[in-house]
Amino acid sequence: MKRINEYKKLFGVEKEIELKDLKSTYRNLVKEWHPDKFQEGDEKREEAEVQSRRIIDGYHFLVSIAPETKEANKEVYNESINSGVADFQHNGLVLEVTFVDGATYEYFGVTKPIFQKMVNSNKLNRFAKRSIFPNYLYRKSKRDLQEA
Image: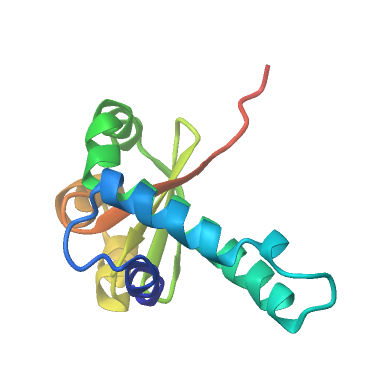
């Protein structure tokens, strides 16, 4: 959750993420902080390199949790959650779930007690479908390479 708030603050997003506004803010920030704007050896150049990486990471992260992105990928997401849970791990307030089809999603704000209930559930997939998947902010984090 801290990462989400940090990126929203960086891009000036207060409520819902709108891709059009996010894209224009991204372009302006990249222009402002592009390392090539600074001379070689200038102390601002190093800061600009760090800041530009942060801007790029933040943009990709916010695009991945935007409502428009979720809506566009809803069908693929539903197929993944119906395929069954293959593996999962909890770190802080982030639950990373890998599904049988190879897709991996991160769920934000999942507390330790909810995670413990999931672990102790005798029907893991059913618990996750009812208590985690519909209730927490998520994003697709990666997809494993499928064997040829």
